[in-house]
Length: 144
Image 1 (tube, rainbow, N blue to C red):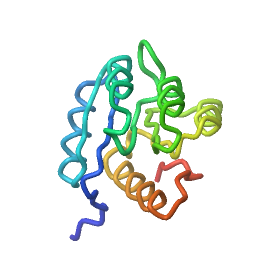
Image 2: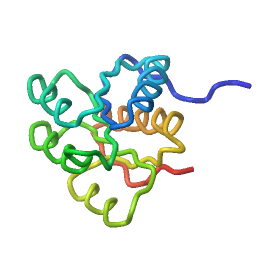
Image 3: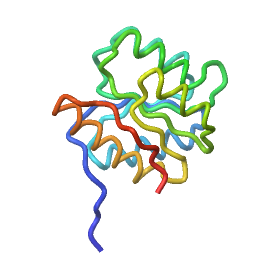
Image 4: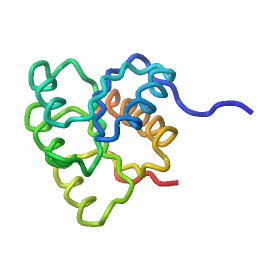
């Protein structure tokens, strides 16, 4: 069986989730696909790293619900500094109001956690292809 998961080309991803195991799993999986991943379990620390060097990253992937700062709050802060950076939100459950809030601030896509690895690879590939062609925002929630 052939792997149809798209590979990255060294793009730098800032990944934030309060579940350490998920950060580890996503980081390893995305690195195997060719991405460079910096993982954080604390959104405040991730924001500090991003603020210190906002052009170090090509995309932000953040959990929706985390202690200390929600993924939407983190995305909003990041997008104020770098409006061009693609932001993807991941969550175990996405309410309509969460999706609406994320879309309103410029989040590219939302992915349900059961689809995290393959779904994230597909979304990141799509985001970087769109970015290279001048169109960044996606309109679909990825949950197939």
